[in-house]
Amino acid sequence: MDHITMKMNADELIVSALREDITSEDITTNSVMPHAQTGEVQLLCKEDGVIAGLAVFERVFKLLDEKTEFICSCRDGDRVAEGELLGTLHGDIRVLLSGERTALNFLQRMSGIATYTRGIADLLAGSKTKLLDTRKTTPNMRIFEKYAVRVGGGYNHRYNLSDGILLKDNHIGAAGGVREAVRMAKEYAPFVRKIEVEVENLDMLKEALDAGADIIMLDNMSVGDMREAVRLCAGRAETECSGNVTKENVAKLIDIGVDYISSGALTHSSPILDLSLKNLHAV
Image (cartoon, rainbow, N blue to C red; front, side, top):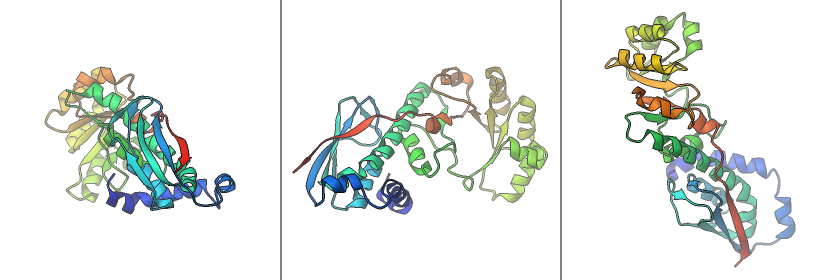
């Protein structure tokens, strides 16, 4: 995550997380460390995985004290191993203690998403299918979680509701049908916007194609129906497979031939990557 993105979009969210953890003071740290004292602490990896969020981790401490230094031996996207020393933080011990949990919460969460995403992306390697995330993200964590998906080898679906047109079942119900929903979207949206339609069966698919949809989302359809859907869409629309896609079941979807597979599990079900700050000492 580059410096401009951090300053423009992430700083406010990081500060909010710090305020959640420190409402008035860090009473424990202030009890044992009443005065400034320079120290160091090590960032250690406790299990194998993919690291993501190192700049966010560092930024937590920089926002508490700009003089904090983080010397890191890896980069986002690197595979890391249990027992590996990933870096060293140097600064005011009070800052290192007060920022520890917030910084680790970001780094562990983002690294867990990158690790889980890499596991599925590796299964899709060599196929034409791209792995996408969804909007099923933790409130106020979307910028971090979608970044972690990219680090893990996935791609981002639309960022938010302003970013693209996706006519789902309730939108179709509100409009009165697939054809009418697509017509209304075409009339309202700028011509540069693609229109994606969620379908649950082949009849809905045919209606969406006839209405001129650009992308068809095949939602919770059988493997056989999805194969037929890809055949029908050939050259007329791109295809996306969606619905309870996980690392455990993605293998059966690889040879269907869809352009995209989207998985909410990337962001809502990835376990954290276990990391810790250890061996704090004065210098």
